[in-house]
Length: 177
Image (tube, rainbow, N blue to C red; front, side):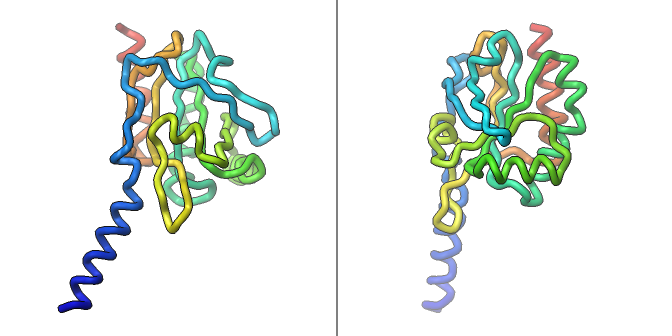
């Protein structure tokens, strides 16, 4: 009985730690997107303000070269021409290093920018961090930012396989209004 109870407590504690992002507050739709400046896989710096006048899909993901993150990245890459037609750019953010991003892009044929947030500061500004096995990682959240730099839509705990399709649909609807 004690062993079962202890196992249940440990299981719930682990689940709570992995889902820490659920208790964070993300910037709300209609508010200004927090600005940032992060390194890319080629060592250059990218700031949100560089994309003023464009739609930005800012997606946070846990780790390069893991199954869910690879599926999500492949789907954004698959749909990149559609994003380009709408004037939107894709920016992926994780706590991985620029070198890890470079390897991930090369291995998976990714041509959009992946941004390194090794300290998790930007991920935290966007309410998108979680703890996993004692490490801070970016939680799988996405922010659709309009050309004026305001958050138009927030997606939390996204499903990698369906996500790009949903963002494209929402982007089309938002551009109509």
